[in-house]
Amino acid sequence: MAWKMKGVWYEGCAAQGQCAYYFGRDREEPCKSFQVFQIKEGHIDNVDIGGVLVIMVVDLFSRKFVDLMVKGGTGGIYISDTATEEQKKVLEPFLANNVPGHLAKKCLGVKFVKINLSQEDNTYHITMPYGELKLSLTVGADGKNPVRLENCIFSMVFPNLKICNAHFWKYSDFERDWEFVNRSGVIADFDMQGG
Image (cartoon, rainbow, N blue to C red; front, side, top):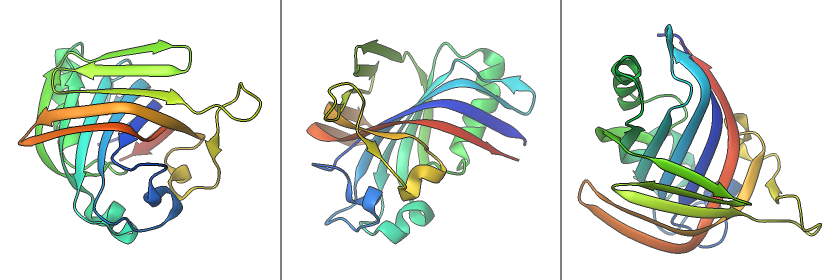
């Protein structure tokens, strides 16, 4: 199936300080990740998917950086309940069947839920029934522009990676019950396609 999507990606993970994976390093234990895809424009086959929010919460299998994209992890996928019936029909199988670039290699389930994304200045707050993420852009020495990760391995998928402080994120579903405070976070644009 032909597909294309463009938008903004928000991520909070379990790492204290910036996650080692962004620097090609292994971790002491596998990481966990709360990812939000704000799809601003795109399509799957001929179905417009612009305006849809998707959350993926991933429990990674390996602590090794080299395993990250190959092994990935297991996770739940949540699609905003504002999606139309036509969008739901294509999004559920598309996301559950290992979209290139996402880390939920083994999908625990797909749920359609109410997702809210709000912004106040440089702070973003995402809520859904099974979890929540609040993160703020880290501002550089000029007091205005965000700190960026340049030439990172993930820049191929997520250009313009901006470092954030994930004030907190929590998740409770599929026999996982996590809560993290002051962890690694990023915001980036994405422009992906396949088919």
